[in-house]
Image (cartoon, rainbow, N blue to C red; front, side, top):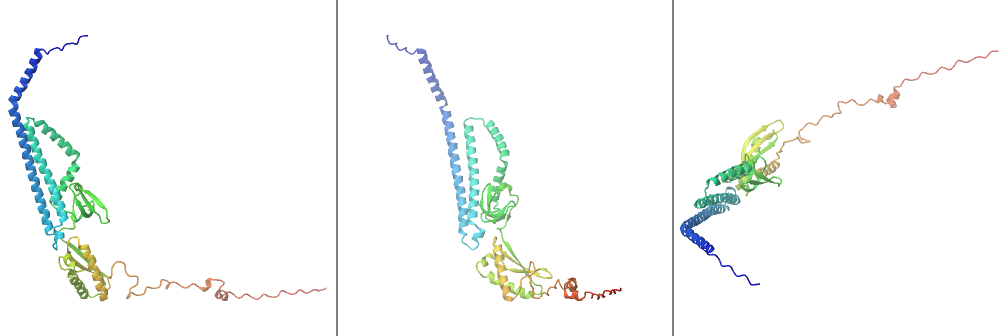
Length: 358
């Protein structure tokens, strides 16, 4: 069979293709300036947003590094570990810097995105309305998360507590080992770790800010000489204030406040001292130890709690069996006393004799 000859294109199809090319070329020629303008505008918006974001982030990072370097500069001083806790300041500054960097990036990039959409002639009204509705729905659904986040931000910015502080958060208490924007981590007295949501903390008692008070109550007998007791305690306080490390832990002289209670069996002498935050318990233990040793050397006896089982000047307790009558010997019928008191039996008369008669 003969091969089929190729059918040449019709002039109408060639003309249509040529018209399409001409229309495309004319469309590009008419709109290339607009496209170029829009492209350059979008490129300029992106470049400016990136530059502003980079500058803001570098400025925030520099500020945070300056805060950390200031904390490290005074860390080695006598009170540096207390007033400027390097780890606490570092975590606090990093948390604040992270929040500020995130907020700055969100604002800059969000504004740039809206400007790009506006440059593309896109109506932003429906988009903003949808975003508002979605934001309200997310806000209602994640209100606890938002509450925790905002509470954490304000706690960090206000420096309510930090790493190393001993706090009472109501729901838990212990030493702060980590401060986050959503959760605060505490180490309890028994070693347990508490994860406390920042939104659940209604009150905070910080035991590590400012100064603390060490209170010691000494109970002695009411017959002791108060002037002698005061002199001994004052000597212990003066010696303790001159020794290391108590000279740094004590922020003021140890004061003898006077008598707190006067009872029949004891009297209480109150002793107080202003100490470094968190060191009041160590000062109390050391002060009690020294006072007890000094009283033992001086022959002064500390009393308190339940009375001692044996007191030197106490009268002997009466015998509870003293008022009980001894048992009677007559109670036992077989005892010699009972037998001696038994009645004497009467002698028996002989029977009458019988006479026989025939």
